[in-house]
Length: 183
View (cartoon, rainbow, N blue to C red):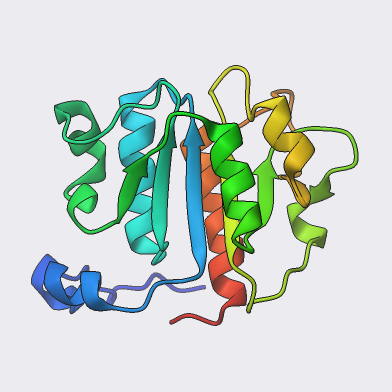
């Protein structure tokens, strides 16, 4: 294979990105992301940036998860806290019940018994989806896992048994987004 000598990197202004105002007005995917007890402000910022990239409908921040504005969230969010709708709700369990009562399909991203691996799952694109991500050490709360319609797991093949939670979010969200045929 020959080198791609004519593959000039694009400048930011050449990317044809929509304005913040146009982005906020666009229809989003029927996906909400729930962050429970996320300790790292950088992880929180990464979630916002990924949610913006993939047109997520909303982020819910629960438990000890910090809320914008915060300089360390902003450092990784790069302004996505201004474009992605978000709300703080203290109890993740009450939120899970509320979302389920409102017709959302509850997906916990966790390593548990009877998980469905990401490469083998399917979903109805007409269904509203709530993706729950948990604490960097303890994961998704057991109460939420118990309420889940599906527990999703990313297959892993190395010696480590987990991924960084914000990296995990990027993988999971991309799998959902590409099935919506966006782009």
